[in-house]
Length: 418
Image (cartoon, rainbow, N blue to C red):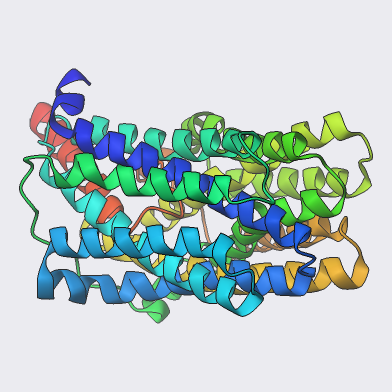
């Protein structure tokens, strides 16, 4: 780990500062939107714009990288993010906010691609696994800590928007000033959606529905928390609980994933998620809301890696990165409509139906997984692909790093077995 930090400390420090700013901005917008009396429908549209931009960025960034290189793309996207963050507070308008969210989503997609490419370049075969793990931990830690920054100043003022702008601006300095050479951008051949659907219908539709769940939890939860009258401190704790649950439950669910039928685990996790969501619907105890938020984050966030691992069970190693990229795209498509649907439901039926939306999607994945258990035999546990912890913020570059680790581990095992 010391070697990893020595080789990539600038990237890790920059990513931590970046995620502090990005983690805070989503929550801050949800709270500020309620203060400005934006209704749930508009907030849903504003939050959806991020996922549309992210999806567009994942498609266009490779062309930008080939045209002008990593350093210029990284600096340009960082400048746009900083400008967008400060403009949120300068122009309080729904259409402007929607456009800025689109820009921010597009830019962060490209930023992640560049950061993960640099991570891969600064790692060796021996340190790549540790580097990826540290990178994901830093990402989640930055987002979790970013929620607590909501308590630093009044969300109705300019200070928090200035803070996230400064954090993002500073985050690029250690990365761009480091001596690490810019990497070459290379990705595997993409897998068509029809091929992915044929490989695993459960992973395909499950990831699509999970996009809606992520959009609700990570984009509309601040709107929900504000609508039900939580204080700023309570909102920050509520959102922190969601992310903390996702971070802390990743390992135990991953551990189980490598030791039991993954499809059965998907059914169990989503079934529990549906039950927990309905508990949120009926809950009236503020303290219990934090527990529900923690458990929902814990059931939903590892599910993304679980579905990737499940589809990998039916693929050759050289197909896995393309499949991960395909699932990232499907997840993004599902996330695009999630905030709009949640906003409409909350406005029409009431804020508590935020949890019903999540419960329905969790139950749908659970039911479909149960149905698929009668259609297709399970892969034996000793033949299953390894579980690799990834998040919906990880790009195909991170997936390819993870698959390289799997290939290296398999090669070592084959060598030791001879």
